[in-house]
Length: 199
Image (cartoon, rainbow, N blue to C red):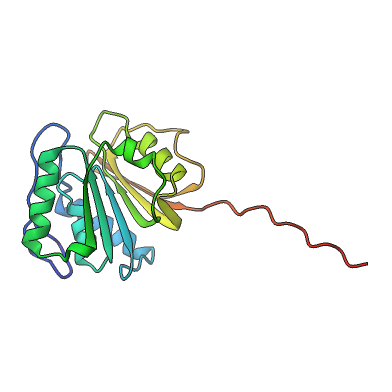
């Protein structure tokens, strides 16, 4: 698999094989990043969170295009090892990434240190993990106000009524057996306190 564009464009990254792992094809990754950039996402200074990272291709593509920092989470030690090797091969500066071998739902249950501008969610097919991950990410403050969440799921994934209401749908597209969804986080305004009237 190769990075499509940016600083590391054309460079190869390592992939992981096994049940639940299906690295995003170049066609899907191109569509994803065109979608994000069409919505005005500015890579410079952006913080990116890659959930169920697998090969880490989405986060690495973001880093290649100028994202300031990416966190990559996966609980499979083989995936984590492959991600670390790819980042080393690309010579990405260590301060620009953090690779975490974690049970993702437990990690998201803790409050975020700082919110992320873009969150990728690419759960294994058939395990119904999208909605729980989104709910915990919202509740824990992992998504910045105005931040984007992009999910790659199976075509028939049903999460009806289980995505937090503050995530506003932007895109829902099919690419063969893959469904790409995009939301924007809109944190509700706090009620304003009326100013005292002047006599």
